[in-house]
Length: 330
Image (cartoon, rainbow, N blue to C red):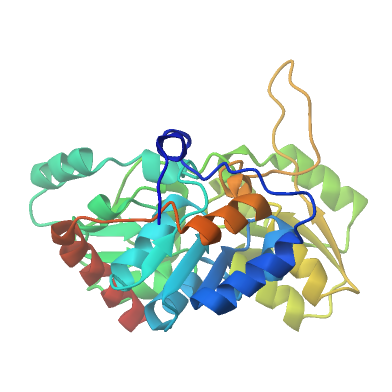
């Protein structure tokens, strides 16, 4: 397949698509012709979730990447998720519709910085959140997601010396529920850090019977107000299995699409982010990186099979070990 310098510069294929093209139909047609599978995170646009072969959180996507027999995987999420696909399935072609889809958490922990921190703390094992680069995973003893972090941490002896990163809020929560004193990296998700305690209190007054659900990447004061604390999959499962009709949701607003689709008789209220002084408020909290995935970019990435995700073989050999350990413990 050809590659243009313009695509490399932009980080995605920016070819004009005729207005007459039925994007959803053509995307599914190319998937059949090329033996491709589309994986989408719950935080992507609803129209992308609707055409995906599989939609899930980070743990579910990792499991799917490990077992999929498709020749091509299109990861509609952020770049570290595409890297995880390639680490687990190096023989597959992994496509990332827009390589600019980064992650503030992954950016907060550079491999060189973690390497130095490890050297300063001999005898410590490293537990890394899945929201990290392949190079950071290569320095890691075990990977976790928000859905399995406590279970994985519980597998260590109580007196184990652990470094947890890069999400400070998740690590702080795990410390609080396990009685551990892990050393915490000071990273955070730019979406989950913004949720407003005042807005949750206001919404709770407006919807007194609503269940408050919060992602574990949220700050401790937000988690303290939550009835349900967990991953996106945990929150979705709770709503599906319980009779409550109203839910106040503190996580990226993309999950509302699947919540509403699978629970059409229930009401889901997104928690707005904090408004900075002089700023303009909005009704929901979105990850602009996830929203870089569009139907147009998916169409082009399948048509031209670009951008591909490649990982240095030495890094991959080390990075796959902590991921596989996580999957065994999950």
